[in-house]
Amino acid sequence: MVTVVPARAEHGAGVAAVAEAVRFRPETARGSEGYLVYVASAAEYARRLAGSAYSVVAVEEGQVVGFLRALGSGEADWSAEHAAMAGDWPLNGYVLIDQIGVLPAYQGLGLAQRMLDAVVRRSGAARLGAMIMHAPLRNARSLGFFTGRNGFALVREVAEPPFMWGYYEKRLTVVS
Image (cartoon, rainbow, N blue to C red; front, side, top):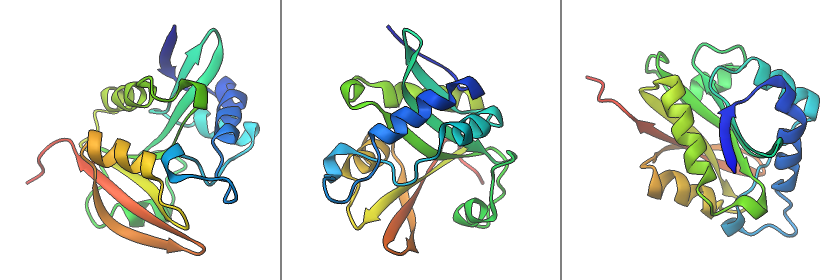
């Protein structure tokens, strides 16, 4: 049985393995598969997870089979670039979905949704943001997950040649 639990530093190697399994490879990539462009080392993922209040992993029999790295507005890894993507609004109650990955054998089982739901419950966020690649290949699987199923809307496109990203957002509470 797959369980979703808070991510900890000791999950770093498992997260790195999942990330590598879904790494973007331009020569073989298909937008319908979903993928990650930036993949860190096991040590870097361990460091990032240790400092994250909201990240979660999906685990089966001790093995990480999926992860969702989420940054809260006050966390150490929050960069000027992340803040700029969020616009001019106050970042209080804001969570950025930095990366999400599920091993191919576990895709289509609802794990991504379970992980996103866990992050929302843990964070109490009023707003969620996510970056999704638009070019050189459109990440159709991620777009469908975030925009179709979960109601995220495109806020702006961000160029980082050779890539083009869409910054998507969902407000969970009405802000007046």
